[in-house]
Image (cartoon, rainbow, N blue to C red; front, top):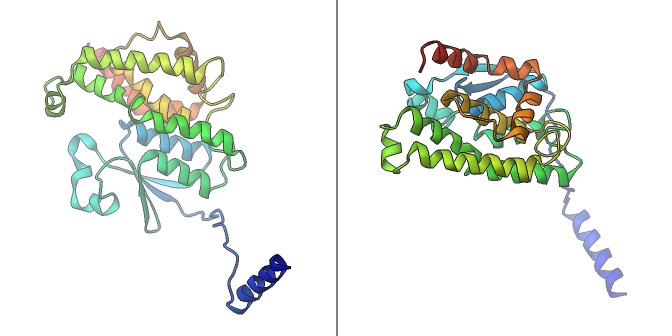
Length: 252
């Protein structure tokens, strides 16, 4: 009897006070292009761009050249106060951090479910595990590249980084990707590409800038080949590939 009275009183209270049930935000059907602020040399920027191209998300690319410090301008700080690449602007709504951007696009657009499934929370959690692990592991491939090619860079010296030390970290990271994430799967989190693969692939492929030897990592090699079977991935990386070609021609 107490439970029935409580339930009735609660229902009357809700009705009298015009409380409405919370509504989930619906996916946007906007055909207006989002603005993507990227530098094609940036691994995280290429990952976001690839997701847009794979899913036909209308977008306009605004190039921000990192090596020219264009991300440090006051005008760009209004887009991304963190002054990092990439960022997006959707009619005044701005967002930074590539993983947050990709999650947002998957949640707000009708993208294919393999990228970040809406109706499979366990698979989404598996993807999140890699994305969270990426920052302090795969992302450090960048520091190996910088420590190798620019050993006198201020940050490298401040952090006492060496090419040899960073290479060891990269080798450990690739081994973990093979043993823990890839195992016998086609992609990091299953049999189809996800945003985890985009983030990892864009990072690892850049190791070619230092002529990294992938032969001890056959699973990584096959996985990269599968990722680049797509013309979209080839197109997104065309600038990087042109840089690699010039470096080889110049014997850098």
